[in-house]
Length: 117
View 1 (tube, rainbow, N blue to C red):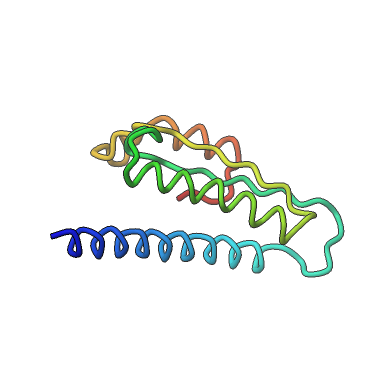
View 2 (view 1 turned 180 degrees about the vertical axis):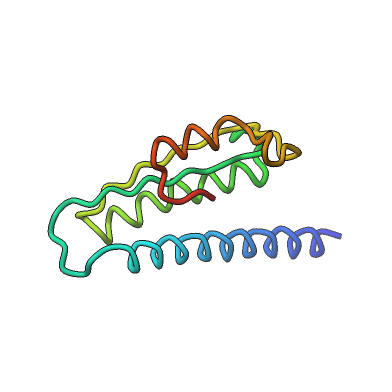
């Protein structure tokens, strides 16, 4: 029984690491294709994260938030001229569909958030 639990825990940890890697690669591709290569000026990037529960639930949302923090450190180290701002909204009702979307979509659209996860 312990072996099965350990394997399941290891597998879920590996899967979350893979998902974080995919998220980071997607963001890096977005940056690469939207910014000139030789640009020396400071570039700003706004990234929004929508969470269905709170970040303190120690489940998927907590791990997703850890990916947001990881993304911040990795991008700051790799791209010193990139100024990354992240925003997140917790406990968003995922049953709402257009045109009744949560107000956060309108707010982020007006604020000019570049990409939302």
